[in-house]
Image (cartoon, rainbow, N blue to C red; front, side):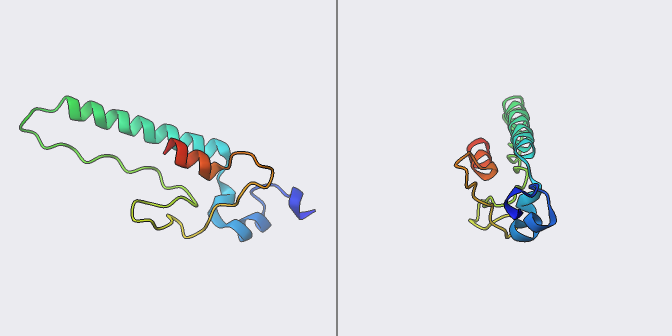
Length: 97
């Protein structure tokens, strides 16, 4: 019975933390936001004068189970592995992020 509980159930949240609350759609939307921010940053870099300071690159949207630049997990929880062999949300985040 527990195996078929919804991904956002209390049991899943207890077992997997914030990673249980992120759906595939949430990861894809975060990737879209990150790519749009990067495109805007590139546009700003290209269109600044030579004497202007280059703006800092944008920081990606924090995702559960994904490590940051320092090698630490962003939320302290690990993403659950998908037992069915399908692509996990954290794999998509690594690919698009």
